Image (cartoon, rainbow, N blue to C red; front, side):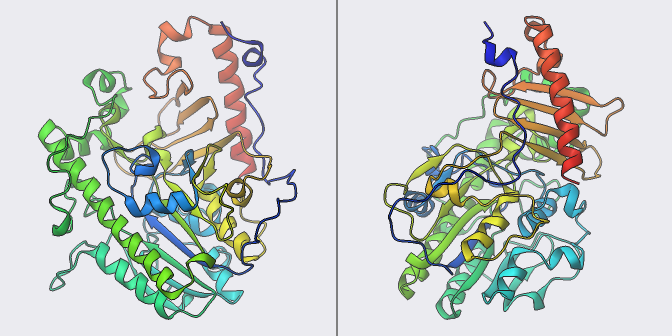
Length: 467
């Protein structure tokens, strides 16, 4: 039985472009006005690969401690699940359709780069460093940072003549920066882990040998929708997509899947160890309590759901990411809290600037997550715009709207446009596309037609507003 609230579509609330309705905070020690900032970014890490997120198999003790000292966002999303677009969004606080980086070869315009969080923080007096995967095309911005240890392209876990695993090298370089950097400082650490070795069709996940023993005697369950029945329910263009090609290369058999999953987990555990090294370096210098730490990933990853691997698509596993924020001055009553409101990668840059007391440029389209971290009342988004425009063989382009209950998907590269509608409350694994499942649609055809009309209009309104 559909309740009156659903029949009147009160779930469809306009996207809020700024937090409002804030009230004064209770009396607790104020966070430092100019905290040090460490932003840790991983590559292709799903939201559910943290012990703190409820994963009972993976070992992430340092990230779990970070979450216990801070806040874990349980509904964090990437608005465009591919590395170059997501990283441009993280830098600019802008949706893909505004920053315009649509391929691995493209870079931000000089005007857009001038309003990225590292440039603005450096201009305001922060000492800045970058370590790891840059992820955008063009020349590397070596001179835009006080210390640079970044690399172009996908990078390599092992370099000729260098015995140490890349993750370990990145962690040690980060600790060395922390030991000597003048305050206040901004350090961005962009780990390659747990991305596959290259950007092509490869199942290789080169691990640090010290982690080879991990998960040896563990069986990692296959996802609920990693079935031939779920795959057969997809439209033909998804069954022929790059995600299926890589499925064959990575997890086509149970034996392949177990080895791939375990190496994926091993890379994450190895990265977690370096997070511990970074936090330890802050503590050793005596500056942990005045350092903001943000941990996130550029996008999620399908690991067999719907018979697919990779990202690119609007399925939850592809767009949901881990997000942990440990903020100086966070009261004990807020530490260890989980926040269910929808955070986006577009919010990271405004959050970092807000923490440093630097004005957020009008061109940024995200919102500072500060009120959600501190538990302050704030008007917040009820839905958001998704887009993926990579032109690549057998990867469909798509756009859509992800709300609190419904998800609307448009495969824009198909002729005609192919639409999907999912009820995330009643179908959280997205097993039943309402528009192509008569057994569901025909139960309430008028209701679903109205939902579809509303979401088509919402998609158009958001698309227009974000350009």
